[in-house]
Length: 63
View 1 (cartoon, rainbow, N blue to C red):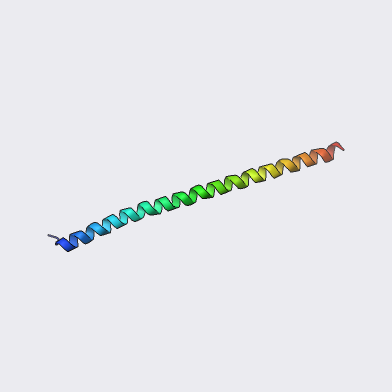
View 2: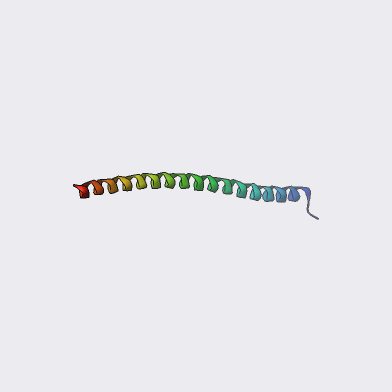
């Protein structure tokens, strides 16, 4: 049978592993969300610049 100190040690290791995994998942989730938001902003900026270029080309062609 496992002694009291050893049992407590095993419980701490298991709890630390589970809590560490949850914490790691949370951190990666937050990083992913911020990355997606940043990429969406860059995409919107790129699309607006592309529309501006298309309008400029249309104006040049019409002249």
